[in-house]
Image (cartoon, rainbow, N blue to C red; front, top):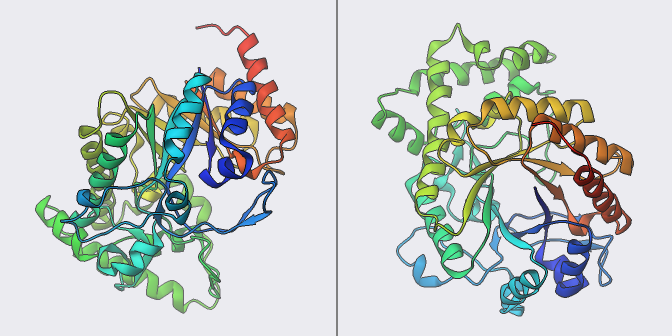
Length: 401
C-alpha cells in the first residue's frame, strides 16, 4: 500500500530535511510527494520554527533546471530563490529518503501558472469574449505543450523520482482565489463553467485540425454569458446542471461536440508526457475533481487512465461516506491498477483522528491502491499522529479480496 505525504521544500528546509524524513518514516508513510513547480499563495506555517506565514514565489520551478533544455522555446522558466540558495537540496532529499526507504515523488503543478501567463498572454486560456485567464496556460497551445515536455524531461533526466504527480494538467475553472476576485452578479456553477470555457486561437486551430468547428459553440456560449450578465438576479439551475452533467447541453449539439473534443486535448497531452517518461518513473494524473465532475475541467478520467500509469482522485472536504462513494465510482471509471485517494488533513473537514480513520477505511473498502495526505507543513505536528494511527489501523485490518 502506497502512503505518501504532500510537502513543500521550504517546510523541509525550515524543519530540517533529516528531521522531516525521520518524522515521515515514523508515521508509517512510504513516501514523500515534494513540490517541483508551484504557484503563488499565502500559507500559514504551524510547523516552521522560523516563520508562521509564507508567500511562495509565483510560477517558479523548485529544481535547478538546465537552460539548454528550454533555449529553443517561447516559454522560459524561472527557478525559485529557495533553490538558488540551496543548490544541493534534491541531493540531500534523495539521500535522506533512501536511508529510510521512502519513495520520492515529484508533485508538479503544470498549467496553473500566473507568472508565465502574464509573461506570455498569447498561450493562456481565453473565454468566449477573448479575455485572457493569466492563471491557466492553455493545453491546446503547442508552445505550452513543448514547455511541459521540456520540464518533465528535465526533471526526470536529473532525478530518480518514483513518480511525477501532475496537477492542473487541464483547463481550470473560473473561480481561482485570485487576488481580490469580484463577482456582483452572483454566478451560479453553470455560469462559472461557461466562463471557464476556452476559445483561444490555439483551441480553434487544433479543433479544426481534428475536424471539429467550435465557432458555433463559441457563439452560443457567448450569448449565454451575455444573458446571465443582464439578469436582475441569477437563475439558479445548479442542481439540474450538476445532475445531468454533459447531458445538460443535449439540446445544443454544437456545445456537446465542443465539450467532448475539449477532453481529447487534455488526454492527448497526458499521453505525450507519458511517452517521454523513463521506465523508472511512474506518471500519475492528479484530479482535483471526482469522475462525475471532472468533465468540468475538460478531463475524461477513463481515457486518461488508459494513457497514464495512475490516477490520484482528491477527496477534499468530503464526508467519510462520500469518500467511499467517490473512490468506488473512480474504481469503476479508471482503467489502471494505481488509483490513489488524496485526503486533506485540514480542520474542520477532518475533525478528529477517528474521522480520518473512517475516511481511509472507506476508501480502502472501495478499492483504493494508496493514499496521499495534504500537507506536511500546513498541519499541526500532532495531526501527524492522526496519520500514523490511521495507517496502523488500516494495516492491521484484513480485507476480503
